[in-house]
Image (cartoon, rainbow, N blue to C red; front, side, top):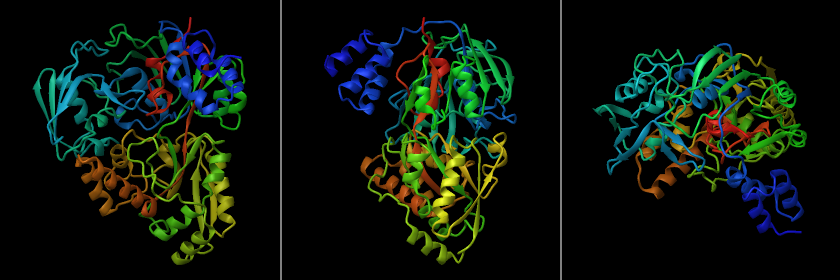
Amino acid sequence: MIGLELLQKLFSEGKVSRREFISQAAALGATAALSQSFLASHVFAASSQPQRGGRLRIGISGGSTTDTIDPAASTDMMNQIIINGQLGNCLVEVDHENNTVPELAESWDSSPDAKTWNFKLRKGVEFHNGKTMDADDVIYSLNHHRGEDTKSAAKVIVDSIAEIIKEDKYSISFILKSANADFPYLLSDYHLIISPKTSDFTDGVFSGGYILKKYEPGVRCLTVRNPNYFKSDRAFFDEVETLGINDVNARTNALKTGQIDMMNRCELKTVHLLKRTKGIQVLRQNGFKHYTFAMQCNQAPYSNNDVRLALKYGVDREQMLKTVLRGYGSVGNDHPISSANRYHASELPQRQFDPDKAKFHLKKAGLEGEMFKFHTSEAAFSGAIDAAVMYKESAGRIGLNIDVVREPNDGYWSNVWMKKPWCAVFWGGRPTEDMMFSTAYAADAAWNDTSWKHDRFNELLIGARAELDQTKRRAMYVEMQSIVRDEGGVVVPMFAADLAATSDKVAHGPLAANWELDGLRAPERWWFKS
């Protein structure tokens, strides 16, 4: 039998298949994590070389008939994979190593205090309507998310910009209200797609690798390759058909029967069977994705922090990780910063299922015997119903009464999320602490889904963003995680790995983990094998 080193060399040279590699690596005693890590870093070399052609058919969850193509209103996967992976581009892209790299921007630099950022724009980029991109388009697009009247979920992200100055046709400067060492990351946010200045943001005209042909919100979208795309090494498919299939069993069957080529959010109960299915490959990404149980802090009884603490101590997160995620993830500690983030607070004690503390806080709140309505749906995340039932059972053993209210999948994000006092939520996470906290925890954030406001937290948010000393910055982010953990309105029981599945005819390079499906860029970055 050959050794592991030789096996890895043969795989890198394309002389051993992926299936053979996994089988022989296991026989050699290599752990699954080690072999998967090696595969992830070498898949590009082992896959076929990128080539053009074919129609990619995507079965995707997270579509709704209330969807719109406006990037400012993009809330879930179907529109994100259409707008970001097919139709449009940001100034900045996040690569597979979580680094910022140029996209519509060609380069950038900052003043020493990180308050002024100067961007050079890429020349010769053509929108789908034939207009050439310039500084006016960029300023117009970013202003879509700024101002008092905007309804953009990205408003809080661009609020840090005091002024955008057009230096010349292909150069702009951002003057920030305060220093931000992570500013380029903000410009990679999936809302901040650049449109021509004549656009109303709903016509689907952007600069991406595919052109919109047909769009039925939440149902179907068809795009065709942009022959004038500025990236010569991307957008390999002739066409991309995106189908909204919220039911995970229907997505799985569609993949098994060859009706689609790829799907997101595999059914974790049966993913082990899917892995054994001939012609199908399962892809795993470990990133920032997490699930929350969001409580509205401006509504009784969740306005009482003792109630929030009782519910945090009442969840058995180890059991939930093992049963709901089948081990594909890690336990959460009631804050949204993952271990993949730079300033993850690993020093904070891990919150455990603690019946005595849960009872203590419930009694202190004077709500023993209270019934708490928890709203959920499989649209929140795959396994959300099971997680809710498990939560109800573990909490019930200690006198915490939870009524699980099952909501329809369609319209969950418009009718339940941020409407019901307590509900299950999916978060893709963000590549920096500032982006995550600014998006969902800042007092005035449009997606502050717990309506939580904390003076010290908001003071630290601004301070940490401006702090250039890494030691001081880390201390500030650790304190913020501690505050959210002990006083915030979310239960964060677990971080989940992304599991997607494709036909084995689909090839790809190293996977980015900032969002599922290769950072939302699968249609742009992937291709069919010959």
